[in-house]
Image (cartoon, rainbow, N blue to C red; front, side, top):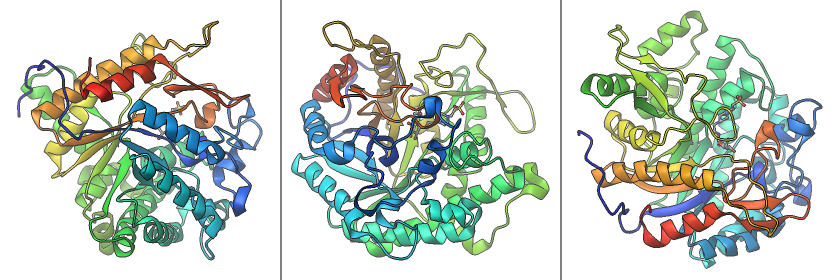
Length: 454
Ligand code: GBH
């Protein structure tokens, strides 16, 4: 369908699911409490030189103890949903073997408190905190990790399934595989060769597929399963038919390693040819599992991925950002609001997707408190207003986006960047744990109340 003009007022359909997102290691803290095992992020962050300032998630936002107050804040803002992740090493301290009921208790309480506040829980089963015991046995280099993951995912779904209706298997395979096992900038800090990375990627995809099956086998009928992937949000450089056609090709090919594999149950010919001898080893049965039908697709979208038609056999070329391209406080976070239009639109054109959620969108900003204790983050507010405007364009055109999870509710532990990069719409003083809603929280509250972008 051709792009439609921007309607006014820019409202969303009734029931559009406004939410926010967090992840266990980034907010919980309490890293040694109630029998939690260690994860690769504990090891990595406690290793000198790996994270900014040596920052760790030992305390983070202390969400483990403060979730009730934070839920009250969500309710005040009018949030309809909350995306959190379960820490695998809380539930299975050694990754496999005996579960730790006390670890699961926290999620029982969290889910109950969310439902009591009329906030829908969206549960991510893996947001990068792999049990260290499993890493010691090869981590995602080992196929066994995919099997262990499925057992863990099924266990959680069985216990939360009476109340949690939506599950996301893995968060951003492309990040934990590429940044953790190729670039070494995230845990476990490895720099594998091409073949090694491709095999790790395959095991991640397999974990997703086996996880989908395990969740379905253990949760009540009607439970909805998907994933949250930071698929390249392809944007045609100019809205002309030739560039749009190029963008469609790019959507499949640029995401061949993860989302395309999951949606199609196969690796593209081009992907395998590009890898040659470094292609992953896989079986037909594994590819079938990887392609297990999902109920929805979560897209984490922060930045645009521009492509153009170039007359090549491949059908498109990537267009990299010039040095002057505007970005937010994180250098990688280039600003291209049209990514929230084109990303979901192209995904829904290329694959038969029933429902899409924007499982993450948001930005870092150089937030500071004014003398009277406010955070006037006009830059983040500008970012959100523009991205949501483009999301609304797609939704009003019929792109099946059902909800939006703003990353993030709270400033939190931003992985290798430690506490230096703030993504929250609520400011956190990490010395006192005091929460201060920013201007962007006011903006988001007004957006939710109006169910429209203003
Ligand atoms: C998401 O990643 C994550 O799901 C979430 O946990 C995170 O807090 C949030 O976004 C904000 O970053 O430092 O040059 O190696 C977004 C995708 C991929 C962006 C890895 C940062 C590292 C760039 N991320 N990338 S670099």
